[in-house]
Amino acid sequence: MFSNVRLLARGVVAGLVLISPLTVSAIGFNPCAFSGNATFSPKHPGPLDSLGYNVSLPEPLFPSDLNRQIMTKSVVAPSGAINIDVVITENPLLFPDHKPVNVKYRVDSTFEYVGPLAIGDHQVTTDVRILDSQTGSYVSVCGAKTTALSVLAASAPVQTGLVVEFYNQTLDHYFIAQSPSEISDLDRGVHPGWSRTGHSFVAYLTDASDGRGHPTCRWYGLPSAGLDTHMQSASLVECDAIGYDPLTKDRWQLEAPNVFEMPLPDTITGTCPSKTQAVYRLWNQRNDSNHRYTTDPAIKTMMVAKGYIPEGFGPDGVSMCAPLL
Image 1 (cartoon, rainbow, N blue to C red):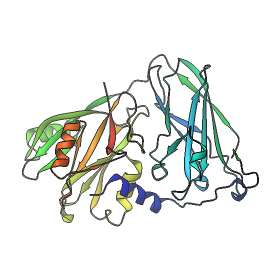
Image 2 (cartoon, rainbow, N blue to C red):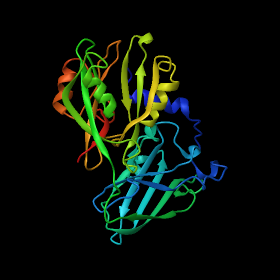
Image 3 (cartoon, one colour):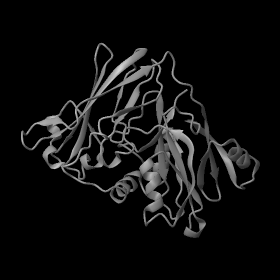
């Protein structure tokens, strides 16, 4: 199977028409209907929640090569107002107090985390800046956008369930499931050869994360391709890429677009949001491709010693993040 990095990079190249004007004077269109709006996760936060945000950017403003970087910075004022500055630049060193956003993973990226915030309404001001070739300074593309964010007395309710790990000794394959009916079938031997390993982690139920989690797709590696295996991903780009990548689209079949929901880590550092823990994905490097998912660093180390490769974000290869109860 492929690593997250290769699939995500290929998905961006194949799936987007990238136009690369870097200066305001070269844009030649009005992007203001599309840029500068911040969306937060969770959607209905409580006073203990840290909030991740994304800022919508129109494709023609999106950097098309690695020399052009999106940088972002958020500041929470004493009043509770949130100011978000997004800069598109060829010279990140000009913005040492901003955080870089991984260009290849724009669809998956959470730009930054803010909060926790006090109960009440918070004014959010976002601005997208880009170099003006006439003045040599970074100027607002469309002017600052202001919206309101409400923090409630308690977080919106969510539902979670255990994701249970199974192992098939004959195949030397691992499999995870949250669905009670699937778990029951595996326990009862409807699918022979599978037994519980005793390991599990928590995930949000489908459509029950209040924006905290990404839909986790599940692909089935076809026996006709010598696979007979499953792979899960919470990365929207990876989920899409498997379906149209010429190296994978005839070998894998989409089994479900959302088996459970999981937050993603920071796509550069691999750091998980607060109140979550890293889930590592390990690949067996064999023709009968199979993955193991674990929150236990000792298990990750053991699998790497057996020849498995970590797949995911950041230096530790974090695939997704499991909520902590």
